Image 1: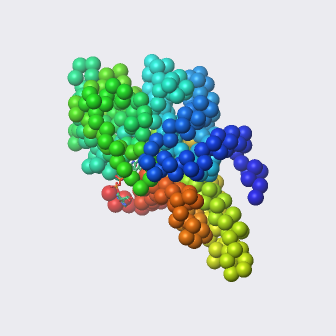
Image 2: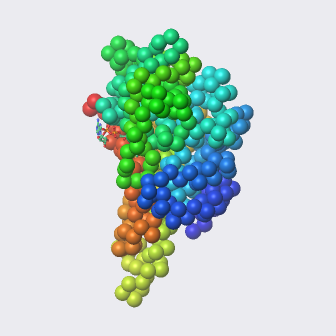
Image 3: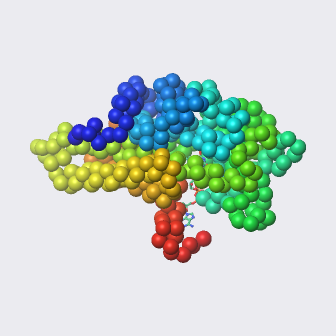
Length: 387
Ligand SMILES: Cc1cc2nc3c(=O)[nH]c(=O)nc-3n(C[C@H](O)[C@H](O)[C@H](O)COP(=O)(O)OP(=O)(O)OC[C@H]3O[C@@H](n4cnc5c(N)ncnc54)[C@H](O)[C@@H]3O)c2cc1C
């Protein structure tokens, strides 16, 4: 199949493929077994400049759009690698870029562009709130020139491998504000000084290698100058960043789907049972073809969402729809690929069971499928809300 004819950003894709070739299955298997952070891979991506594509040139990045960033992440995933260890270094800075003041931009963005500072932790989810973000209870109380933060977060990925974290807190109680989404604020937390001084990070071992953690805040002091934007308006800033995150993660799903489709179709052509290639049997061939059809449709929606984002248009619905379609396409492709490989699909050395576990995440995080359907059902189709 001639991929190049329809590929966006072919030079970027080619360069990413070359880099990823240096990180084969053995590398990821070893990291997966030990639940270890892929530091060498992240360093290589940083040095090649792939993690700073979204940072404007004035701050030392490449000044490209989300379309370029989706090409990077899709190729990482198609190559059998995983961008989850560092994808947030690409987009979390968007909160500072869009809503930070000039001093914050000058202080942080050039260092994030070089990788000297890692801003790849994003602290929103709480055990007591779940998807209902307006019910977060981590509270930042103003005391002179500091906020004092108390509370708990869960599933905060890469916190142990990040210098800074974008943290969503309440600065006014939910029942004392006009709208539930008012009274939340964004703080930039310096994790290098916070840990041991009011912040405890506890890793959570999960079914995939994702460096995710629980955070406990016990009177952590954060300087007032680290408030991003206006106090009380933080929910809106976080929503802005979520669209970028959903589109980029959808691109990772497209890459995963392509990985599974490549592997499944190659194996179906080569594996002979009952005197011929298994792929001649339509029971084997059609699910792989269906996976390709689903992935191709999802890819168009993801590209459409990225175009809307890059041209400054509203893209919340398309970002959600792209993420849902892509995560379902990658999961169907994963299941089909595993089935096509028979027993070998379960063998660690084939990397399929690892990628199968990895791609399952995306129907839950960063937003679960039901919540996307609820958005479409109520905001797009005008049906009543259940909550
Ligand atoms: C590996 C991993 C990494 C993560 N990384 C981060 C991170 O870096 N930063 C961060 O802030 N968060 C992170 N998350 C959290 C992630 O965004 C949430 O897990 C996700 O949004 C789902 O929220 P929840 O787990 O609280 O599920 P809940 O809100 O408890 O929902 C549980 C289930 O119920 C369904 N449900 C809930 N309400 C409704 C409803 N009204 N109608 C229909 N169905 C409903 C949901 O769809 C879901 O399937 C991560 C999660 C994981 C697993």
